[in-house]
Each structure stands twice: as structure tokens, then as C-alpha cells.
Image 1 (cartoon, rainbow, N blue to C red):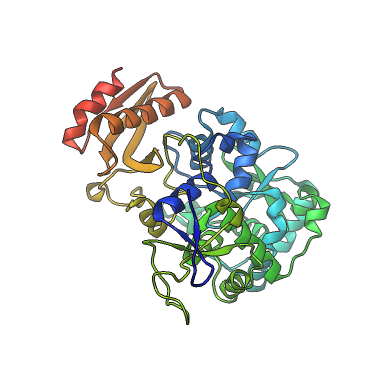
Image 2 (tube, rainbow, N blue to C red):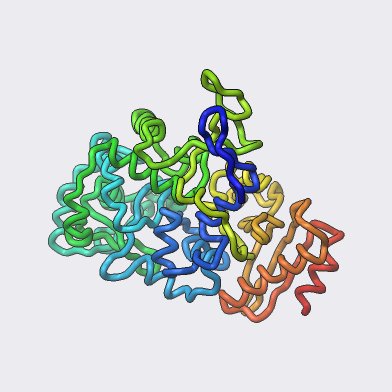
Length: 423
């Protein structure tokens, strides 16, 4: 890769392809060094691993580690996230995420904001102080230890199933305590959170590091910039999920240089309004980790299925800008209106998205309910072989010994794919 400083404003110029390769390396999909350090290093590299309840082949937080590291044992993934002593904690970043423990101080601004608001999805019940004392005396606890997560709808005579809005007062209270940092979740049992006092779990030096809002937002912006490699302001805001005065602090951190990111211009990416002395074609339209610009990304690309919640593609506008991928999760779309399938997983090969698979599992068989290919990624033999590799590796990882494809939406590629799968 050759990067050329702009003669107009000192901004580094990148082609879209150069930016894509930098992003892939930053996210751990390019180069042998991306596997060094296993799951803990992967978590620090990506900065945040999104959680979700959907489990098809595996839960998303497992798929994210697998996509970068290959067939790492699923139990090893769980231990790396949730173990004693804690190495990670759960909190709000891009969404509900697993976060490196050392980043605890960066989220102080968010904990204070929740404390001041004293409301998020539900009114905070008066039992919150009493519940905190219960955790202090009896913790660590799960929701079953404090009365359950759902209200008792049966007592009111209704037969409607409980939803997330039907949280019990104890569940609302414990989640509020999590939001404000009085309790923390650093492990799960059977997918259920285990809550304990932050002072018992978070190392003292991290707990005492009470960063002002500006320093927290600046540090989190730095984490986002390193994890994304090259990012627009909108990408950084999406990663950190800041708004209002906190988004203004993010802007200050970028423009002052405090976040440690440098302005770049990526050809073909949307251009902001040019400043005086700049042309629209050379004005900076993104930010980059300067360390990522120091060397050309080299090495072998991963060929793998991607969770729809993977930080490489979790923001739709960014995924379309980098890969030409227009993708959304269709799990909540009525079945007859789905295009790609319930949990369609993009397939990464050669640094590009070559297609999508809607997977399922039946005994020892990985089923591809639907396979689709994206145009312009090489000849039929090449993309069929890559798709076959991705399916067979995923099957082996989840303990399947067979792969069955039910439907291929690209007629010209159905024969080559089935031939490759049969090899």
C-alpha cells in the first residue's frame, strides 16, 4: 500500500481499497498476527463484542471470536469472556457488549448520565437501594435469587406472554444498578447474568480512576478509532453511541487531536463540506489510527461466516461503503418478506463479502437454508470454493460432520457450489 500525503492540507489520501485493507487488519481478518494472544487479545483489538440472544450455529459473541481466530474451542471463548478473576465486563457501547476490563474508567460519563436520569426503559422502583444491600450481603446473585426477571402475569389473569417490557421491579432495579456502575456483570451462567458489587469485582485502581466526561469520551473515541482502523465521524459515533453534549466532546477530541486519530481522505467515501483552501475531492472525510497507516496490510485473509452483529459490518451504511453490502438482520421481518433469511450471515473471503448464508443445524448436519452470492467477486469456481470452505469450517467448529444446501439463489453458481461441497 502506498499512502500519499495531500499537498493541499497535509491529509493522507487513501483509495477505498487501501482503507478496506486497513480496516480488515484492524479488525483481525488480515495477517497472521491477528491471531496472537487468542480471545483476550481479540477483545482488546475490536474494543467491544456485541451480545445478542439469538443462537443459530452459536451465539454472536462466540461467532465473532470464531470469525477471527478460526476453530477456537467454544468453551475457551466463554472462559475468556467470563472467568474468575474477571477480564471483561458487560456494558453499553455500540449496544450491549462485552468490553475489556481495563476500559471500565472510560464509561464513567455514561454511568453518571444514567444515574442523573434515573430512567431508561422503565421507571426505577423504590426497592433499588434495598436490592443493592441484598447484593452487598448475599451476592453475587442472579435474577432468580431476587424474585425473577418477569412480572407474574398469571396473577392478573392474563395469558399473554411476558416481553422485555414486563420486567419485574427487581429486574428493573438490578439493571439500573448495572447501568450506574454499582453492580457489574463479569460472568454468566447458562446465559443468565451474574450480578455482583463493582467494588468486589473491578480492580481497585480501575474503580478509583474516575475520569471526567471529556477524558472518558476521548478515550472511548480512541478505542473506536483503533478498532475500526479507518472511520467516518458517523462510524465513531455509532461505535460509541454518544449524542448531544457527549457527541460534542467526541468532536472536540477529534479536532484537537486528543483522541490520537488523524484526518484522512478516502476516495469514493462521502465528502463533508470543504473548508477554506480545500477542494471537495481532497477534504478529509474520515479519521484513522496513525499506527495503522505506518505499514501496508499484508498476509492471508480469513475466509469465514460473519455474525450480523460483527463490528466489521454492524453498521449498515459503513458495510455498504466498505463492501458494497446492503445488509440487515431479517430475524424480526415476517417470514414471507425475508430476502436473505432469518439469520443470514455474510461470507468474507479474499477481503470481500462474496455472499450470504442462512444457516441452521439438524443433528450433525449444518444446513444452509439459502445461499446467495454477491456479484463481482471472481469466477464461479473461485467463489464456490470459498463458500464451500466457509461452510465446512463452520460445520466442523460446531461439531457437524455434514453440510446440506437447500437453496441457491444464483443459478449459475449452484452446480459449482454443490460440486465443491461434495469434494
